[in-house]
Image 1 (cartoon, rainbow, N blue to C red):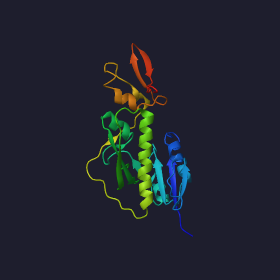
Image 2: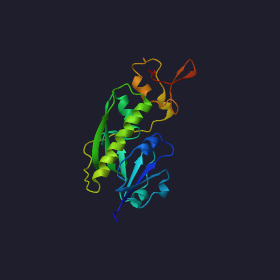
Image 3: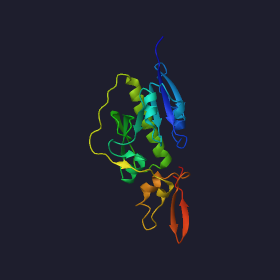
Length: 216
């Protein structure tokens, strides 16, 4: 009987934008792996590989020890843009080419060795949901690339000076009334219409802005 490796995708209950895309993606590797999806880290143990996806909490060291290999697909060219919301921060810096680094999870956040790095490109017109869809596909592709060659994989240490992005909150969606739409378009693009929509204050009143593309 052929041994199958056990793989769990760990999702964050408070950040499930990626779930539908993950469930509909066919890795076509069922002959090699047993796949599971979990939202409870306490139930994830004795796995060959665990992929925490869009996970906003820091996993304790004991979780790493309970599983053979925990891998993070982090959308930046590490060691740059460690920490939270790397795609959003890069878009605010007018970047269109976004790298994804597949790294081993270690005690220090986003500092583990790198297995693969790939990238995806934005054209600058995508809104939040479109950005997430492109980002999600990039994550799935780099994961599949790893799974195809596993266990014959090698990693390399991160080289260079990094920076750490702070967590973004709904208050960070505030626009500046003294700047133009064009100047703040990237800010509008990254804000979620439902969870953290763009807003501004004028004459003591708060106004909320939601942005959509006209359907053709």
